[in-house]
Structure formats: C-alpha cells, structure tokens
Length: 262
Image 1 (tube, one colour):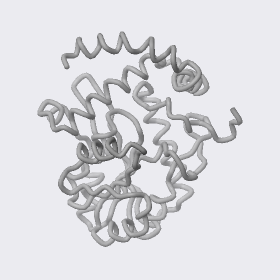
Image 2 (tube, one colour; image 1 turned 45 degrees about the vertical axis):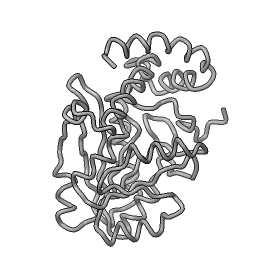
Image 3 (cartoon, helix red, strand yellow; image 1 turned 60 degrees about the vertical axis):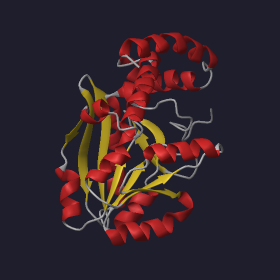
Image 4 (spheres, one colour; image 1 turned 90 degrees about the vertical axis):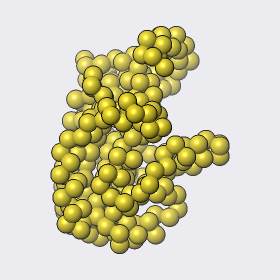
C-alpha cells in the first residue's frame, strides 16, 4: 500500500481500537509510559502507530519485497561474525522492538544453522501461515518441547540460537529492573547455553527515516558470571527502550507485573 493509504487507514482504525481497549492494551501502554517517565518522550498513539508500521515493514521483509530488503542497514556485524568464526556458538538475543520479525531471518547471513523456538497458536492455519512466511534456508523453527535436543544440536553445530527475551506467554523469567520498574527477562536458556560453552550476542532493530537498522551491540563470552550478565543485559534493554520508546511493544500483558498486584 502507498504510505498515504497506510496512514489514512491508521487514522480510521486507531480511535476505534483505543475506545475498545482503554481498559486493556491501550490502558496498559498509557500506564507504563507514565510509570517509567517515557510519557515525556512518546505517547500511546505514537506507540500504536509504530507497531502498525513495523508490522507492515516486517511482513514486507518476510515476503522478500525488494525495497524492504534493500532498506535494512547493518551495524557492528563483527560482534557476531568474530565469535562464530572462532567456533563459538552464539545465542543472538533481542527484544520486541522495531520490525522484530525480520531479526531471525537476518541471522542466516552469519550461519547456516539458526534455530528459533516458536509458539504454536490455537488456530493451526495461522501457525502454518507464519511458518511459511518465516521459512528461509538455514533457519529451523523448533517447538519449545524440544529445548534439550535443540540446545545440544545448536552447540554441536556451533550455530546461532535466536531469542527474544523481553516477553513470553508462559514460564518464569529472571527478575530484573528495566527503566526502574520490576519486571522479567527470559534469560534462563541463554544463561544455560552460556554455561555450556556458548556466547551471547545482543542485537536489536529500529525504524528510521531511511529504513530499518539492525545493530549488533555486545558479546558476552562463554562461562561469564550469570548475575553480572543478567544485570548488564537489563541495563542494555533499558537503554534500547529509552532511545526508541515508541517502537517497543508496551502493550504486552506481562510487562512490569512483578510485585504489582493489579
């Protein structure tokens, strides 16, 4: 769709969505922006506009639209290339920010063995559709029930394990502070892999006027202290969100629920 049409559709849809979700997703976004102080940098409308645009951009990228592929820019690629070249398997770890659906396919630039745990939806047709859209040589989707086998295979092949660690529908995460608020990061598997000889690479994507940037940030060496690693990653993620607050998925229902009875 042309940009003007996309924007016109958002103008029509947003007031309806807001009215229907004032006490749910829209309300959570407003509450979280206020509690973290990010309301000074962005607004619920900007957040939902960015979610809308990033979803469309991510879909175009997964469908291999030429313009979408060409508008992705890469920074600091040595952060992931160097450990892989030295035979160190890597957990490539990001968050739900920007057009995050493109991040896993990007990793096939660096390895022929990229593993991604995916969630099956109750709607089998939707699950199959997403699987078909994400499909690309070198990327293997795995069910969460196969964690042990996948971890062994990933370490053996010295490949890449792709993860988004800021949100999950189930399971217990590591309690941390993000933007000064108690929350969870789902780091148990990355930390286990690190203890078994893998490194951790943090990376993210965000939308700019020129397109999408994929930036590799830091490398955490195998056997690093888990408590220190967890703290540093939480600080990284706080920085990422504060730099592009409109592009993070604030609406997720488990954000900032630790110690909050409401």
